[in-house]
Length: 359
Image (cartoon, rainbow, N blue to C red; front, side):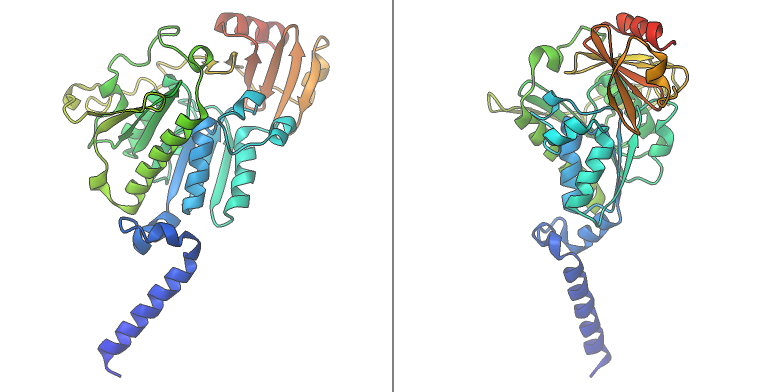
């Protein structure tokens, strides 16, 4: 046999071996823009997902089924009954168990695909914490529900050069854009003044939200992430996609003409959110009738119930303690966060926490 024939035989055997290894993804890598080479890149990739609620839980499942190598999930929240309408990764038993979303998602995703390394992190995305989460990842997916956190992600992305995929949903409408630092406009190019002030824009508390638009926008986000990971950079365009499922409306706004050189973040190097200058200590949670308050020091969850005589313990596990206090529920996490349910006024929520837990 000639050397050329031997080389052809070895190459054929190697390709056959790769096909066997990725047989569960065959319908995916047979799509030409991905191919076996793209599937191998997916297997070696690391994705950061910030927020594992509606958008995040759908995106997480799609990423795991697509065969990414590693998925780091950051989420600050726990499950409630009204999550199940749109957060398809979770079940009624998950709500009853009372575990944080990140831990519950990791357990479910591991059962879907044991080949993927999943790292759950139960924490709030703050300027003090976010830096290490960006280490050694290829792309970031936004699963959050507020613009303050998105501007923090945008700052971290511009600082590290790691791209991220934004999406937001309200009612039957969704928006999405992919941000590649140095190539596309960033979020602040689109919103130079930063997030809208509290009360200036509708929320899912007032406008509602359809589960169907969540799945559409999460699918777009994951597809954009796949494009980046497999290396098809030309397929990523500087556009804001806007979809209204109820009216069958579809718009695509070309952002390539935005004056990036005037942006204080991606052109000027300003990092207001990453530096903590624009950080807040309380956040109204979209669609939750709740406020999150951060304590200055982390509480001792083991002794907490006994120290609040007026409280009734509803849930207590390794991750959190949920108490009934006055007319509210207080869910206290080990990292010092308290979610006050039944309250939308940050000042009233801080006052309630101060009275019962101290600030």
